[in-house]
Image (cartoon, rainbow, N blue to C red; front, side, top):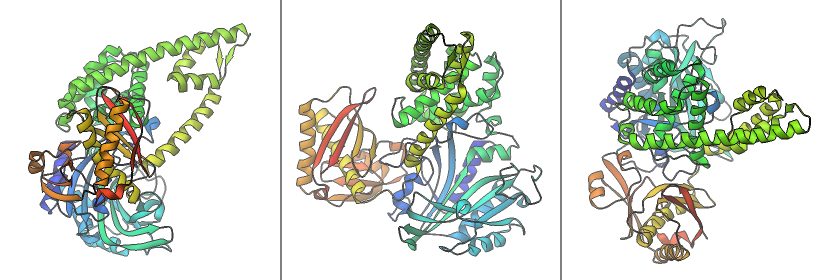
Length: 583
């Protein structure tokens, strides 16, 4: 069964069970301070999981494009992916465990045809905070899961929470038995020997955790996630996602072009190319900050491995077109943005080629100094500095050192690189720890302030201004917008004054629900209009601002305080960035 068939079966199955199909949100999150990218299907639904009414109703289903970057360095093995697609269905205070579990069982066994003996499930074992989930276990037995195929695990395996506090609850996970031999007589889904593969996770969001402990939520939600690539691989009986139609045409082309045979390098190129293309199609651009840096890193790692395979870098254009053609049925936005994807990737490739040239020049300079000092070894600090400062790959440094007759201490580099990685991962954890608990009073004020700033910039700079991204924390707001040149001091003052004038006018903020076509006809703004379903939520601030948005917002502009622009700078080509605070 092909990936697109699995996706369509999933969406149609849940549609038949009363769910509204909603579009995938873009990979670049809108007004979400907690993440660099959309990392899960629940992320764009945070306000509705917290109790806001969704215009499409209480039962939703979609496919969600996701990027997770914690394991970029692991890509190249047989399972890690940076970009992946998550199929999901949600109950926002509607059905709960029994109906969710029955639908999951029916989809797996009837729609996908998985034999029931190949399925095992895990449920929450219970602890001092919350009881053993006997309800989920009895629902699975009633649905048809065989005796001996239900396992109980603790919070580490069968509990879900975003961050340290917030809505949470036990989950139940479904596992597929690949038929591989058991690693021991006690082999079970918690083993990582490869016999059992997790395929689906249903979270029963029924608690709220704060500093004092757990209380029951007023609204019980169900939040599920099924990975498309993994399911495609299993149903096709393939060893890895790279053997499926999602990657095979590019993998085959790379094998044809390579002069050195390295399967890990082919996987890295194919995976990073797909991830980069998806990010660029959704508005991402390479830079040295945040998500732009992640994109740059993906592209450069891809180029390095093309060099490892001794593939002519001019072939990149051919591989991009091949990948667009292969994936355009699943993701039409790749075809729509083909020219942009080509130009961004080729430009970044050319920059990296220069980086490699500059790094080699710096390397030669350092080696000349060392030789003049009578030294014949390069320490790990130098290898790391070339990597960290010039983006110069350590394996290239190692090759050049050997060619120069120099010894090299890669152990020291490995230690420094590991420290660097741990710091990066700690930072990524902060960015990726989730959004459910991160929409407090201050963030809500900043959220509304972005709407006023967007409207003010249009008045001061012109109608060409459109939001290109935002990031909100409890300390400040950051707003990216389309504009070709640096703002003058006068333009910044006019913008600031306009926002403060509207705040002082105490304008009510109205939440409206309407058809998307009506919202567009009324001139409503939206960063990604295609991400919204047929029914949309629109926030209206007098006759100043009309924007499609999930919220949350203040009820009146007077709640915002005083708005102050702290900085205006370039974000990327044709995009400016404002950092501002509310005092």
